[in-house]
Length: 343
Ligand SMILES: *Cc1c(COP(=O)(O)O)cnc(C)c1O
Image 1 (cartoon, protein in one colour):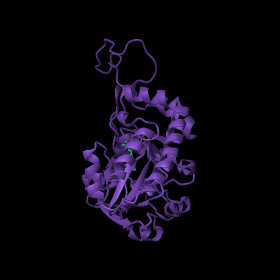
Image 2 (cartoon, rainbow, N blue to C red):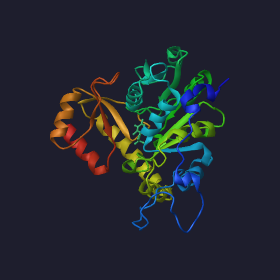
Image 3 (cartoon, protein in one colour):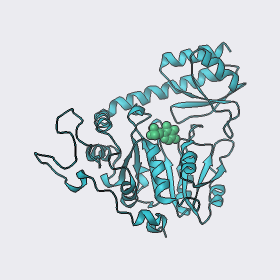
């Protein structure tokens, strides 16, 4: 049986969280003399809502979940870090990470002095459920899945992720940073079914807001409470909250971008495949393409010389001679193809 209390670090379980001025008085008043703010209006002289209620209400409607199931972080990176701090005892616990994947899980583990147990994806970047489970031991608290996967672009078949969630007694984190570019609903609809599931999404990709740093966590109210308890009280600025609210009101814009980017991705994949320098273009459910070329390091440098920057992933496990190319505007993609074809 899954028992969240057993999973949370003891110090976090008994922690009395910081109580901000905006925790101690909630509601409307005409005179605020409780937070040592400057009384003269700059537009930003007041602290932001520590609970980000308006943004969460908007997201709750879009994602069809309750406000209590949403955590907002300073990027997904903050949510990842807080998961380590909430659930992993440094130098005792460990996390299991199928590789290759997003680098932040391992960096965050290292910062928090939490051991990493890596397990390989297959050569086709598929999740090996049995190998992943066998890598877990009594001290494994978290498994990080990334779907669609960065850097491969491939989605994890839902049945495989579910098998893992059902058989593992710690938390399974499914990072869905690129979910908007797929045509499946992702794991948010399964939250009620699985008390050990955490889904991460972000406004950094499809929503076009990498600069405001807003990461989204979805989980049971109990898990969200733990994260809220340990987060810095005012982790999302007024500026970020305002811009997020505005953008979330324009879902059609996001849909239009996504449609355009997917169409460009398919076109770009076709053009890449036609180049003799390109050996393989991996199928992608995301806004980038992983491609194997004849000499990734040389191509990377020559593209840099032309002012075109892609990501050299050739030192990453299973990604020998691979470049990761973000899908740009039609004009940008044309420049890339033009420069690549001249190599
Ligand atoms: C880009 C990306 C993120 C986004 O992180 P933010 O901190 O929200 O910008 C998260 N996970 C993966 C796998 C990514 O590729």
